Image (cartoon, rainbow, N blue to C red; front, side):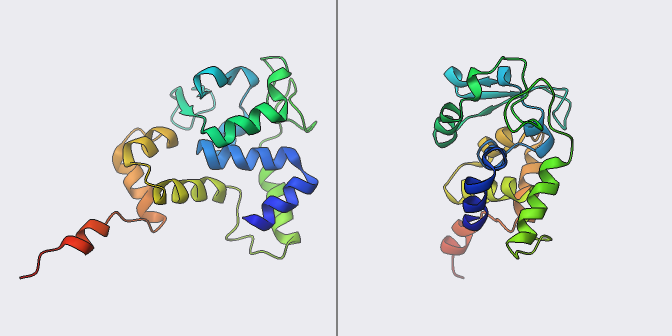
Length: 178
């Protein structure tokens, strides 16, 4: 993560902002790509994920963590027209969003440039990493479900299981002896 961060900070600020949005907001790449300035509600610490870009075809709100809020403010994107897409081919908010796979391709290119395993370090890994670190920081299952946009808690439980995260610490520490 640190090598990618360093590279993006030095060479591609828009890509770094995209990765941070995936990490902190736990949004899917297409949801981030289609985010418009109007969707960012800084005063309410929320981002609207409209049904048109949500995987579940349901509008939802995701929380903007404090760490990302300042990044958004500092980026200057809130000074653009509300109808502009945050991520575009112009490297700043624009009337047209970036093309569908441009961030995945750019991420893969940088991963290869840094001699990292592109099969492991994919763009979607930023979302996975955000989930892992949030879980390890003690964020509860329901909050993760809401941020991830899962309609069923069982989906979130399966997601955590697939990432190797199990809430078995209490069982391990407190299983009574016979």
